[in-house]
Length: 396
Image 1 (tube, helix red, strand yellow):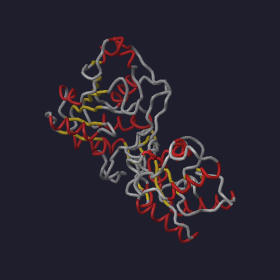
Image 2 (cartoon, one colour):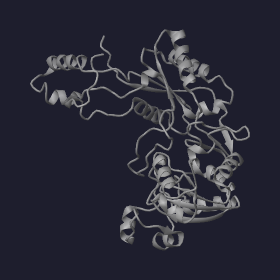
Image 3 (tube, one colour):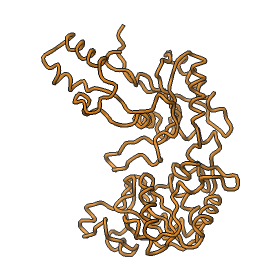
Image 4 (tube, one colour):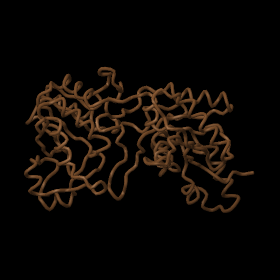
C-alpha cells in the first residue's frame, strides 16, 4: 500500500540528564520505548537528533566566572580591554560578560548598531535615518546615543541592554565606557587589547584588528578553549555557544561528540538492524519575521553528526515539472511521468532548471532547524527528536 505520510518529526521524552549519565544508552532506550508506546517502527535513514544542552550536561561541560576571568586576564593582560560586537542576550552573554569584566580593570564595550549580529535591535533604521546617523561610519559615545535615541528596551525582553551590560561590568569592579560602532578598527582608538564577541564574522574581525595595530586579539572561541583549573572547555569553539547555567556559571557547547553519535548509531543497528543517522543540534538557522532576530547564536547548528548527514538535498521541484516538462499531462499519467523523472535524476542537480527553488542548504542545518522547532527551548521535555521520512521522495 502506498505510504500517505512524508516527513514526521517526533519529540521524545527522556529522564532529566545529569553529569556522568550514559547518555547514548538513555537516548537509545528512550527512542525504542517511544516507538513501542506509540506503535511506530524505526526505518532505515531515520534521524535521531539530540539537543546539545543534554550532551554538554552529561559531559559536565561547565565553567565559572572565575575561570573565564582568569583566562581573559592571562590572554589580554588584565588592564583595559575592548569588548566588541556582543549579542544582546541575558542567556547567551551576560554571565560571560561578568567573567570578562572580572578579568580587567576597565572595559570599553563597543556595541554594534542598529542591532547586534543576530538581529536584537537597539534602535531601528528609521530612527537612524531620522537622526542623520550613518551606521557604517559614525562612532557614537554613550552620551550622544542617549541624546539621539534615549532609552530603548528590547521588544521581547523589556531590557535596556546598554544599562544592563554597563551595570554588570561595574558590579565586577571594572570601570566601563560604552561606544557604538560597526567598524572593528574603531576600538583601537581606546585600547589595543581586544576581545571580539561576534560569532559568524569573527574571523574577519580578528583579521582586521590584527592588520591595523591591535596588540592582543581574542575571540570568544579563544577563551576556555582549554581547561582552566579543571573547568569545562571547548577546544574548537571556546565560549561560543555557551548558555547561562547559574548566576556565576555557564554551560559550554558540547566538546568533541562524534564518538557519541556513532555510538548511538551502532546501538540502534545492534538492537533493531536499522541503519539510522544521528546528530547533535543546537540553534536552528531561521529568522523571526516579527523581531527580525536570526535564531543562530550557536557557532554551528550541529557540532557532530554521522556520515550520512553530510551534504545538501538533491531534489527536483514538483511544481516546476508539473508546470513545464509535463504540463500536457494529468492524473495517473502525470504521476507516472514525475515519478520516472525523480528516479532518473542526476546525482548532482546543480544548474538543472528543475531544481530551482529547492533549498540549497546543508542537511544538518535543515534537519537541525526542524528539530529545534520541534523540541522548543522551554518546558516540552523532549530533548531528543526522531525524524522519519526526511529522505523519502514522491516515488517512495
